[in-house]
Image (cartoon, rainbow, N blue to C red):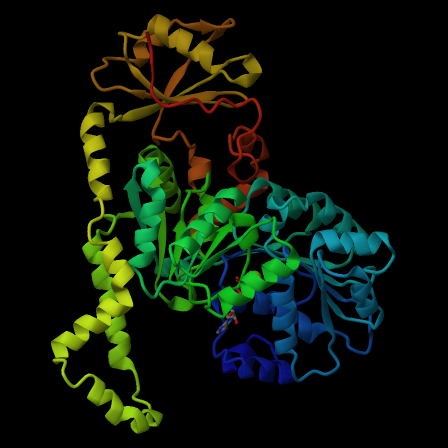
Length: 593
Ligand code: ADP
Ligand code: MG
């Protein structure tokens, strides 16, 4: 508690967090609390989920309230209904001993009239989703002119969810002289833009991964044929009897489909996706939180920001397109210092995507063999045996003891164990008595495809979309000038002013020199070798996604995101890794003719 006091927190607020069992501030709290308690500081804070952001902004803002007034002084914007409720409930807990503080939340999908009534009773802290708050402002049901502090929580998520216009509208409605505190796990361009437009000389704080959950996550992958992905998932689940996990899928159709299959296969699970009604969502979440569901199958959007602790695994049934989504997903496990496992189930074609994510994360995925039947059964039997061993004999059983002993009198201990396990695991043992080795399938295929193993070098050229340059032009130039036929060309990416492509240079001599006198549309065609296989330029590699960690690196990363608009325009990754229109991402395995 002393540490919190040293940061400037006092009295009833300290008592509130003491009740919650907080002992020392988390790193982000240590940095953010004094800034917010100080005067006139805007703030950009980079920190992943699970680092304790709610208390970082919540505690100082609650303390700074002028409770003699019952107007809205603090506005917290957050992407989803669940998150809003979570934040409001957290703030209510922190201010448990402050009867004079009133916090409420408003969000879509719930009765707006009730929310209006609630607002009419006067609140000082309003937690809102941008969409619903806009509605309320436009109806004149809420006045945010008295707001002194605005928190943008999970700003990247809000923008990903398409709240950009709403955010602009809301921020324009708040008074000039407010303070704005922006929290985000990642800093994509859209977030930079909001920060540039709406924050005044913000202080920048980044919390590295060192002290966070993220470092306690190990990353693993299974590589199988596409048709075996589901079976692999099933075995991975069966092989971890104490699993409590979220399975991420790319689409809601997948989420629904996989949840249904798993249910049929006897696994306690359900799906969470955008097509559910609010009450269905609540129901699913309640069952998952109560651990009546072992796994939740969800899309990224649906699972955004859910504060579910103790996940043992996060499973990427489909790898996301970009490292940001992956970071978000895997950040759901390994929280509060506990070990977590982030699993990716990939098919052979996704290896490249996995490598890209590895490069950006600067972490290696551990290859795992898909468990065979024996392994699954062993895991289940041993887990069950441990449970039995750990059970406390109940006294109420005494009465029945003699009858039970008599029933089993003729069985030896060995026979009893066999019967008990057969009864409990009959179905499982039968299913796994003989199952295919899914790893073999991959290996066999690898044998066949060995000759197709590429070793790409990336080149960049000085012409791009603006010069009318297309992948077809590139292939034409290569066909015309390359030293020989059959050279393997990998990814081709066309940017605004340049382009990048991959070439397998094995057995090719002096590739570059053959393009010395080539022109494209009157421009000299200049090839430059790029170090990174994936052609990411250093600025992007230098990673706002990863280098939140301290020191020199961080400051360069931070300086960069302020002024690199132009360079970023060339990225093929638009919003959350979607490809921008008109950018040909190329395809693997072209050969020059
Ligand atoms: P974030 O918003 O960064 O994802 P939260 O604010 O939701 O993280 O906090 C994650 C979890 O950590 C919550 O369960 C919260 O109660 C807990 N927590 C936050 N700060 C502390 C602290 N100083 N000590 C112990 N637990 C904390
Ligand atoms: Mg949060």
